[in-house]
Image (tube, rainbow, N blue to C red; front, side, top):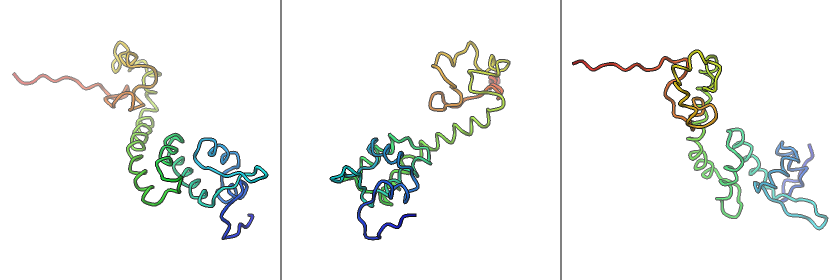
Length: 171
Protein backbone atom coordinates (compact mmCIF):
# COMPACT_ATOMS: atom_id res chain seq x y z
CA UNK A 1 0.00 0.00 0.00
CA UNK A 2 1.30 3.44 -0.93
CA UNK A 3 1.83 5.57 2.15
CA UNK A 4 0.06 8.92 1.88
CA UNK A 5 1.42 11.69 4.08
CA UNK A 6 -0.88 12.24 7.05
CA UNK A 7 -1.02 15.96 6.35
CA UNK A 8 -1.76 15.59 2.65
CA UNK A 9 -5.00 17.43 1.88
CA UNK A 10 -5.50 15.83 -1.52
CA UNK A 11 -5.32 12.34 -2.96
CA UNK A 12 -4.77 11.13 -6.49
CA UNK A 13 -7.38 8.82 -7.97
CA UNK A 14 -5.01 5.88 -7.41
CA UNK A 15 -4.47 6.81 -3.77
CA UNK A 16 -8.21 7.24 -3.22
CA UNK A 17 -8.86 3.86 -4.85
CA UNK A 18 -6.22 2.15 -2.74
CA UNK A 19 -7.33 3.74 0.54
CA UNK A 20 -11.06 3.24 -0.08
CA UNK A 21 -10.84 -0.23 -1.60
CA UNK A 22 -12.90 0.98 -4.58
CA UNK A 23 -11.74 0.52 -8.16
CA UNK A 24 -10.59 3.59 -10.09
CA UNK A 25 -13.34 2.94 -12.63
CA UNK A 26 -15.95 3.00 -9.84
CA UNK A 27 -14.56 6.31 -8.56
CA UNK A 28 -14.84 7.75 -12.07
CA UNK A 29 -18.42 6.45 -12.21
CA UNK A 30 -19.24 8.00 -8.82
CA UNK A 31 -17.82 11.29 -10.04
CA UNK A 32 -19.82 11.14 -13.27
CA UNK A 33 -22.97 10.54 -11.19
CA UNK A 34 -22.18 13.49 -8.91
CA UNK A 35 -21.56 11.44 -5.77
CA UNK A 36 -17.98 12.72 -5.38
CA UNK A 37 -16.04 15.55 -6.97
CA UNK A 38 -12.46 16.37 -7.81
CA UNK A 39 -10.45 19.26 -9.09
CA UNK A 40 -8.10 19.08 -12.06
CA UNK A 41 -4.43 19.96 -11.91
CA UNK A 42 -2.67 21.95 -14.62
CA UNK A 43 -1.74 18.56 -16.11
CA UNK A 44 -5.46 17.55 -16.10
CA UNK A 45 -5.04 14.98 -13.33
CA UNK A 46 -7.79 14.46 -10.78
CA UNK A 47 -7.21 15.45 -7.17
CA UNK A 48 -9.69 14.53 -4.47
CA UNK A 49 -10.02 16.27 -1.13
CA UNK A 50 -9.12 13.89 1.69
CA UNK A 51 -12.74 14.02 2.99
CA UNK A 52 -13.75 12.16 -0.17
CA UNK A 53 -12.62 8.96 1.60
CA UNK A 54 -15.52 9.33 4.06
CA UNK A 55 -17.93 10.20 1.26
CA UNK A 56 -16.93 7.06 -0.65
CA UNK A 57 -17.35 4.99 2.53
CA UNK A 58 -20.84 6.50 2.96
CA UNK A 59 -21.77 5.63 -0.64
CA UNK A 60 -20.46 2.07 -0.32
CA UNK A 61 -22.31 1.45 2.95
CA UNK A 62 -25.56 2.80 1.53
CA UNK A 63 -25.08 0.59 -1.55
CA UNK A 64 -24.54 -2.47 0.66
CA UNK A 65 -27.88 -1.67 2.29
CA UNK A 66 -29.45 -1.78 -1.16
CA UNK A 67 -30.07 1.96 -1.44
CA UNK A 68 -30.13 3.01 -5.12
CA UNK A 69 -27.43 5.45 -6.24
CA UNK A 70 -30.08 8.00 -7.23
CA UNK A 71 -31.38 8.02 -3.64
CA UNK A 72 -27.82 8.24 -2.25
CA UNK A 73 -27.11 11.20 -4.53
CA UNK A 74 -30.29 12.92 -3.40
CA UNK A 75 -29.21 12.49 0.22
CA UNK A 76 -25.73 13.85 -0.47
CA UNK A 77 -27.19 16.79 -2.42
CA UNK A 78 -29.06 17.85 0.74
CA UNK A 79 -25.77 18.42 2.57
CA UNK A 80 -24.44 21.99 2.44
CA UNK A 81 -21.32 22.71 0.41
CA UNK A 82 -20.89 19.06 -0.62
CA UNK A 83 -19.60 18.27 2.85
CA UNK A 84 -19.06 14.77 4.14
CA UNK A 85 -22.00 13.23 6.03
CA UNK A 86 -21.73 13.40 9.80
CA UNK A 87 -23.03 10.95 12.38
CA UNK A 88 -26.19 13.07 12.72
CA UNK A 89 -26.65 13.05 8.93
CA UNK A 90 -26.36 9.26 8.90
CA UNK A 91 -28.91 8.93 11.71
CA UNK A 92 -31.40 11.12 9.82
CA UNK A 93 -30.85 9.40 6.48
CA UNK A 94 -30.90 5.87 7.88
CA UNK A 95 -34.20 6.62 9.63
CA UNK A 96 -35.66 7.80 6.33
CA UNK A 97 -34.38 4.71 4.52
CA UNK A 98 -35.61 2.30 7.20
CA UNK A 99 -39.15 1.94 5.74
CA UNK A 100 -37.75 1.23 2.29
CA UNK A 101 -35.45 -1.43 3.75
CA UNK A 102 -38.29 -2.93 5.79
CA UNK A 103 -40.39 -3.19 2.60
CA UNK A 104 -37.52 -4.88 0.78
CA UNK A 105 -37.00 -7.32 3.66
CA UNK A 106 -40.72 -8.17 3.62
CA UNK A 107 -40.59 -8.82 -0.12
CA UNK A 108 -37.56 -11.07 0.24
CA UNK A 109 -39.19 -13.02 3.07
CA UNK A 110 -42.33 -13.51 0.98
CA UNK A 111 -40.20 -14.60 -1.96
CA UNK A 112 -38.35 -17.08 0.26
CA UNK A 113 -41.58 -18.42 1.78
CA UNK A 114 -43.36 -18.71 -1.57
CA UNK A 115 -40.38 -19.97 -3.53
CA UNK A 116 -41.39 -23.62 -3.55
CA UNK A 117 -45.03 -23.23 -4.52
CA UNK A 118 -45.37 -19.89 -6.20
CA UNK A 119 -43.38 -17.37 -8.20
CA UNK A 120 -45.88 -14.60 -7.68
CA UNK A 121 -48.65 -15.61 -10.04
CA UNK A 122 -47.25 -15.41 -13.38
CA UNK A 123 -46.97 -18.61 -12.68
CA UNK A 124 -45.73 -22.16 -12.19
CA UNK A 125 -48.46 -23.22 -9.78
CA UNK A 126 -51.39 -23.18 -12.18
CA UNK A 127 -53.09 -26.06 -10.40
CA UNK A 128 -53.58 -23.80 -7.36
CA UNK A 129 -53.75 -20.35 -8.92
CA UNK A 130 -57.22 -20.91 -10.32
CA UNK A 131 -58.40 -20.66 -6.72
CA UNK A 132 -56.15 -17.86 -5.57
CA UNK A 133 -56.35 -15.81 -8.75
CA UNK A 134 -59.72 -16.53 -10.38
CA UNK A 135 -60.10 -15.17 -13.90
CA UNK A 136 -56.55 -13.81 -13.70
CA UNK A 137 -57.67 -10.78 -11.68
CA UNK A 138 -54.06 -9.98 -10.82
CA UNK A 139 -53.37 -9.61 -14.54
CA UNK A 140 -55.73 -6.62 -14.52
CA UNK A 141 -53.45 -4.90 -12.01
CA UNK A 142 -50.49 -4.92 -14.41
CA UNK A 143 -47.46 -6.97 -15.40
CA UNK A 144 -45.03 -8.67 -13.06
CA UNK A 145 -45.09 -10.86 -10.00
CA UNK A 146 -47.89 -9.07 -8.18
CA UNK A 147 -47.89 -11.25 -5.07
CA UNK A 148 -44.16 -11.07 -4.42
CA UNK A 149 -43.66 -7.32 -4.88
CA UNK A 150 -45.63 -5.82 -2.00
CA UNK A 151 -45.25 -2.35 -3.49
CA UNK A 152 -47.46 -3.49 -6.39
CA UNK A 153 -50.02 -5.56 -4.51
CA UNK A 154 -50.43 -5.58 -0.72
CA UNK A 155 -50.13 -8.97 0.97
CA UNK A 156 -53.39 -10.93 1.10
CA UNK A 157 -52.97 -14.61 0.43
CA UNK A 158 -50.81 -16.72 -1.84
CA UNK A 159 -51.16 -19.72 -4.08
CA UNK A 160 -49.85 -22.06 -1.40
CA UNK A 161 -52.11 -20.58 1.29
CA UNK A 162 -55.74 -21.62 1.30
CA UNK A 163 -58.09 -18.81 0.44
CA UNK A 164 -60.06 -17.46 3.41
CA UNK A 165 -63.57 -18.86 3.49
CA UNK A 166 -66.62 -16.78 4.25
CA UNK A 167 -68.52 -17.80 7.33
CA UNK A 168 -72.19 -17.15 7.88
CA UNK A 169 -73.21 -15.19 10.91
CA UNK A 170 -75.61 -17.07 13.22
CA UNK A 171 -79.26 -16.30 12.46
